[in-house]
Amino acid sequence: MTDQRSPADRIDTLDVAAIKAQFPLLSKPFNGQPLVYLDSANTSQKPRVVLDAMKNFAETSYGPINRGAYELAVRSTDAHEAARATVARFINAPHHDEVIFVKNATEAINLVARSWGAAHLGEGDVVVLTHMEHHANIVPWQQLAAHNGFTIRWVPLTSDGQLDLTGLDTLLDGAKLFSFTAMSNVLGTITPVGELCAAAHRAGALALVDACQYAPHNVTDVQAWGADFLAFSSHKMCGPTGIGALWGRRELLEAMPPFLGGGNMIADVTVDGFLPAAIPAKFEAGTPAIIEAVGFGAAVDFLQQIGMDAIRAHEIEIAHYFIESLTARFGEQLTIHGPTDVDVRGATFSFAFRGIHPHDLSQVLDQRNVCVRAGHHCAKPLMRLYGVNATARASFYLYNDHADVDALAEALDSATDIFAF
Amino acid sequence: MTGLDDLYREIILDHYRSPRNRGQLEPPAVHKVGHNPLCGDEIDVYLQVDNGIVTDIRVGGQGCSISQSSASMMSEAVKGKSVDEVRALTKRFKGMMAIEDNTAAPDAALDGDLGDSDDDTDLGDLGALQGVAKFPVRIKCATLSWNTLLDALEHSK
Image (tube, rainbow over all chains, first blue to last red; front, side, top):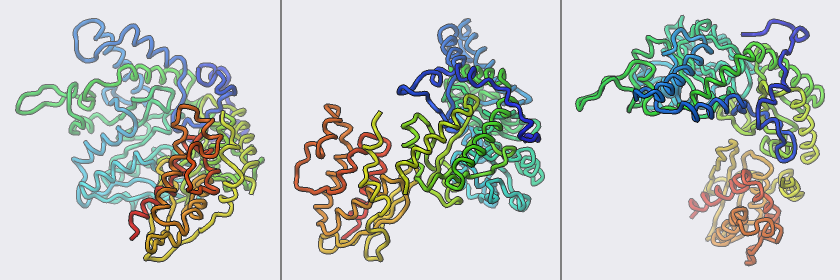
C-alpha cells in the first residue's frame, strides 16, 4: 500500500475547503476562532451526511431488528443489514455475514481473545504482538495469558520507528496468532500487512490486523492481505461512536464459540441449554447500536465517494508538508518520532518540541484552538521504548489542509514565548 | 477563554526551571510513586518522618510544569512541619484546587487571596497555583505530588 511516486509527482486532488464545509463543527468558529482539529487519530469529526443519515433513519425507519413481522421492523432490519453490506464491501470481505458489529476495535480484539483465544491458547502456546501496539491489542492478550498461561512475544522496532522484521520468522516459530497494527497510532508507521500475514501463515499462525488507524485513511482489502481477522472502529472514520466491526474468515467465525450471551445470538434456548445462531448474529448478543450502524454505513459511503486513494494521496501530501515546513522552521527544536519517509507513514505525528512537556504544549496550543493530543496515547510500552512518559501528537485527516499545519507552527512559536528557557 | 497568565505564573515557571529538593532518600525514608493515568506522568516522593515531624523530603520523576512546580513547592512547604500540619496543609491545598466547584462566584473567589481560607497555614509560593483551578484538566497535575505525599505519610511511622 505504499506510494511509489516521487513527492513532485503527487497530486492532491481533494478539495479540502469543500470537504471541511461538510463538517458542521469545523465550519463555524469555536470560541470565536477557527477550530484547528488535529486529533483525528483519537476520534474524527462527523460530516453532515452521516448526522443526517442517522436522524432521517430515526425519524422514518427506526424499529427493532431481526424480530417483529411488521413493516417498520423489516425496514429497520434492512437498513441495519445494508450497513453491514456496505462495511463488508469497504474492506473487500468475501461475505457480508463475516462482518460482526461490535462497540469498537477494542471490543473486536477482546472478542477474538475471549472466543477464539480462550478456546485455542494454553500452556506452551505463543501469541506474537509488536512493540507499536496500543493497549487495545496488548491488554486483552495479557488478561487471557494470565488465565490460560501462554507466552507473548514482541516484534521489536527499528531506530526510525518501523517494525524490525529481521527475526520475525524466529519470533513466529510455534506461534498460534500474530496480532499487529496496520498503522501505529503514535508513530504513524504503516506496517507491511500483506507480508506480515504471509509470515504468520508460514509459521502456521493466524493473522489479526488492527486496522482502526489504517482503515480510515487507506484502501483496506482483507483478501489482498490474506488476513484472518480485522478490527476497526467507526468513530475514527467519520462515523458515530459506539460501533465498530470485527471481520473474520467465515470458517473461523463459524467454529468459534459465542462471546457474549443473550438475545439475538441464539437459534434456540431450552432449560437445558442453548443453540447459538449462525454468524453474524452469534456474536451480536442483545439489541445492537442500530442507528449507529446506519451512520457507520453512511460514513463509509461518504469516504468512498471521495475515494480512499484520493484520501491517502492527500494525507501523503499533508505529511510531506508537515515534515518539510516544520523541520525548516524549527530545525533541531522539533523531534518527529517515527519514520520521515511519507511512503511508510500516515499523517499522524508524535513529536517533542524544545523540551516543553506535552501537557504544557497542548495547553498553550489550545489558546489558539489547535487541538492536539498530549499523553501516552494508550501505548505505554512504546512510550517506554522511546524513554518518554508522553508525547504531543498531531494527526491529520481529509478535512485538514496546509493552513492547519501553519496554524500549528504559529502556535508552537507562541509556546516558545512562555517556555523560553 | 481563560488566559494562560493565570496558569503559568513566573513563580511556577521558576520552580519548574529550578526544582527544589530533587533527589532520593535512602530507607528508612518512605518511597512512594504516583501516576497520572491521563498523561503517563510519574512522581517519586521520598519522605523522612521522625517523631511526628517531616525532617526531610525529596522528589523525583517526570512531569509537566504544573506537576513539577507543585511538587517542588510542596517539598519546601512541608519540610520541618509536623505530620498534622502537613495533613492540614494538604487539605487546604486540595481545597484550593477544588475552588472551581464553587459555582457561587468562582472567579471572585479565585481573584482573592485563597478565598475564604484565612487560617494560619502558610501556603507560601503554593498560592501561585490557584490559577490551575480554572483549568480543570490540569488539577490532577497539581495534586499528583500531594496525593503521593499522603500515600507516603500513611506508610510513615
